[in-house]
Image (cartoon, rainbow, N blue to C red; front, side):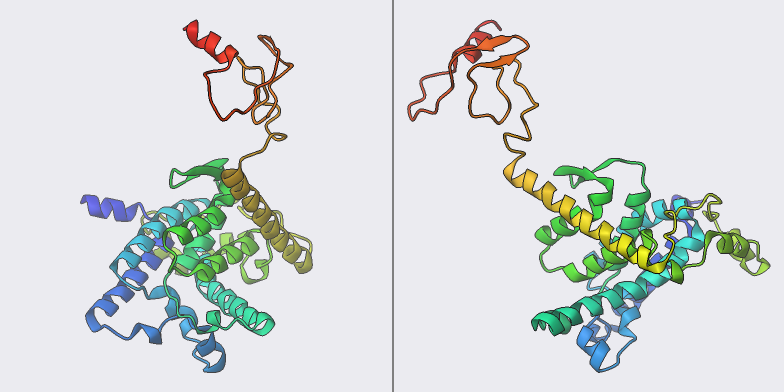
Length: 327
């Protein structure tokens, strides 16, 4: 078996199928060069011209070689990790519903902005690509991941559950022309699915386990990389009713927005003197972030006097100067 075949076999079946479908769609684009504006997501065309096929085609068509390349790599990385946690059948159903629901949420948000605030730009905007579904999968994978923190392009660390939100903002700064609403729609769908607000659309683990015993799905079970549905289940404990699920989902979204805003505030403005009062400088004996170093006791002793700002800097404070001379 060649290395390419081995690498392909390592990709679980559901992820492999959606990857192949996106690549075949791009091959069609490359060979026949169809007008992309006929396949993009445009809320006005969906709602008022009844071009409902755009709900599907907008996720499969891509804007160029770099676009399909980046989305393909992200799909393989995130999709493979998630499928190994939730099983091949669950992954396939999640992707199918994700394609539909991310587009539906996109249209709904654009219509609400237009109906409520008169903001028409989102209604007329054209977007395409599989990245909305990738963000949905990323939300599920990051919530199920054991990692407590993740690095965002090596710039800073965030909790794994906040990772998709941080990625949403950072990518928008790096590539401002990408579809913010498309990515946000994926995050909203993934959050609602994780918190159980969409359970009515998904079969239970018991049903999926029974489906795996069907002879008609025997061809799927023998595929390389097939992952059985975990018997212990992977979803959160189901809320008692749909209303509770919806409140839990939107509560989770609200909490993550608050946490993300706090993270951005700390990155830009710092933690502040009060938040850093428990961090001590061993030599100076001053609280980190404090403007007054006088009469502050530390483990090594007490420093008398205060450090004052002066336009003419005349040298290191006595405590620092003493410590450097001892080196």
